[in-house]
Length: 493
Ligand code: BES
Ligand code: MN
Ligand code: ZN
Image 1 (cartoon, rainbow, N blue to C red):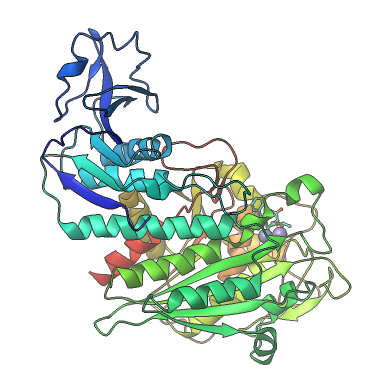
Image 2: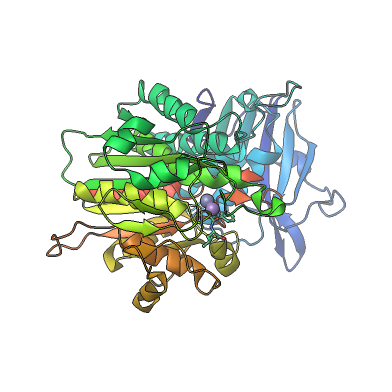
């Protein structure tokens, strides 16, 4: 993928075999016609676009012969008012549909440099395919040698490089998340982090189960104790000299969530390999931030465990002690994400960073409340605004949800500081999880400067169960990665 050459050019390419030129189709009062474009489309003149099957409906794409062995792809663009986000999604359709060509030329209307880059970024994101464990060798996406956006607006090379770094990071998230859970477990995930870090300008420290125990990471330890494949906490640091701000990222990394002794029913268990998406996202985000050499310090915590039922697993009513010393009564072993995050958030809080963001496939309730395209966002006011702005800028969808303080009483335990679930009630399940996490943000006795914190529940958005759309494939989406990097860019300003 890194081989794919990206460019924005006002020059019309000379048509050749292996090249596809994408033209937009819009609808006007005189029926459908081609959107404004730069390349020579004289060979299409007089053709009845409608008869060819072209429509202006977004995502519709038909191929017609071009000149000298090239191909025209006529892409419905929905409307003639296209913003950056529309163009990124349309680029995605192109990447998904035309990955067999060696050169993709996007000849769609752009208003500025960001529009031109969004097309290329979307195309790169759309090229993604997870093919690792099929026995049949399939054509790799590397066949696309270059992606060119035809636009009169000149683009700084850094902007294109940024898109490449982001798309590569999203690709790595998707690959990690799509990996079957027999092939990815806490220790192997930590190894992936270590080996990727070598070339990335970040440092990786791995705490093994013994170190977790010795250092009081009782949440991660407890969730992992039922599995033959022990838990890990991976701390990743990027510390450039010019940094003035510090961002801490915490990711839920359950490599498989059976529910533990509070076992999930068979149908709800399928898909629980996605439960490590938060950890994959915060790892690839810090890698991308380092690759872009942003002048901001970042520390990521990957809270890795496999939640299994066994003779050594935690039981309902067990009480554990988390890293900040608070005790938790485990009433439901399937509410394990908040237990590992309790440790991760406590460890992040000790560093007193300017901002903490955690990312987690935390609750089925998030999917019930917001569906599968909006990620839920909770937290302190400033942190929420920062993430909201970055998400808007990235074209990612988030929705601000409350953390009602009156819910805290539902987590009162008879024997410990807090319980991890309210048995027999599903009311506000996503909010209740957020209220639980809040207990582990900040340091006791450091109330003078409250810790800025945002929580992203991506249980609905991490995995696209329906078919592909825009630049989003079926399966792992890589959602929120671009938002996190954008937050870091804003902090670096
Ligand atoms: N990993 C799940 C949440 C999840 C559900 C993610 C569906 C993606 C799709 C989480 O660990 C979980 O099991 N949460 C429970 C919490 C409950 C026991 C309080 C849930 O949502 O049912
Ligand atoms: Mn669970
Ligand atoms: Zn889980």
